[in-house]
Length: 92
Image 1 (tube, rainbow, N blue to C red):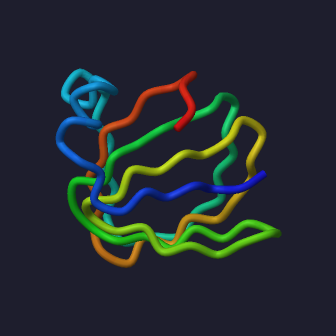
Image 2: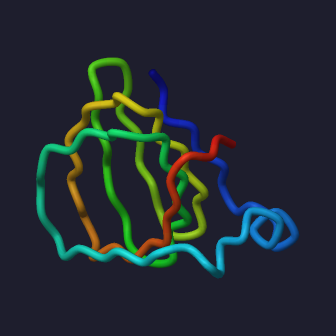
């Protein structure tokens, strides 16, 4: 299970995905465990987070479009307060 990151996707792609209609979520600097019960795609509007899994460690920043697969377990280390929009059940 791999996290997929697309840096600075085009506005056209964001429009095609319907990003403007997605739910919002934010978090201050913190560290916590997380697991995904469904496929999630998110677009990070602000902040920075390091996400660690058994297979990889990735840094996610503002402007990144990110796919988290169903069943993934990870640790989120929020380095700068994060704001994202997200949706479930789609894949990049």
